[in-house]
View: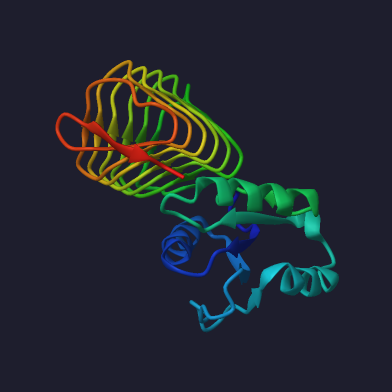
Length: 219
C-alpha cells in the first residue's frame, strides 16, 4: 500500500482495529468506516461511521475523488465470501480495493497477492505463493513455498500452510492449525483451531483434531 493514501473500511469491529494499526505504520489516512449492522458502535472517535448501502451512498455523494480512495474490507472469521462480495461491490462503485502488509510481515519477492490482501504482523508469505483476492494472512501465520490460495481465504493467527498446499475459495484455516505439504483444502471448508491436516479436505467440510477428521459439512 502506498503511504499517504486515503482509505475506508467496511467492517467496524476487531479486524478494523487491527487494520488501523497497520495504517498507522504506513502513513495512510482512514477517512470513513462502514458496517451493515446499525447496532455496531463507532470503533474510532475521530472517524465517522455509516451504516449499510444507504449510508455508503450518502457518503459517496459527498466525495470529490472516489478514485483516490482505497477500500479494505475489515471482516475476518469465516466470512470470506462476504468480504470478497463487499470488495466487489465497492470496486463497482469506483472505490478500488487496497492491500495492506504490516511492516513486521515477510513477503517473498516472488509471491503474488490479489487485490484486497491483508498480511498482518509477523506473518510470512513465502516463495512462489499465490494469494487470491480478499485474503487475510493473520498475525503470525505462515503460508509456505508454492502454496496457491483462492479468493476470500482466511489463514487465522498462528496457522501454518506447509509447502505446495492448495486452498479453495472462501476456506478458513483456524488459529494454530497446521496443513501438511501438498494437501488440498476444498472451497468453503473450515479447518478447526489447532487441527493437524494430514489428508485432503472436501469442499464445505468442517474438520478438527489431530489428525483432522470431518465433523460436518459447512453451510
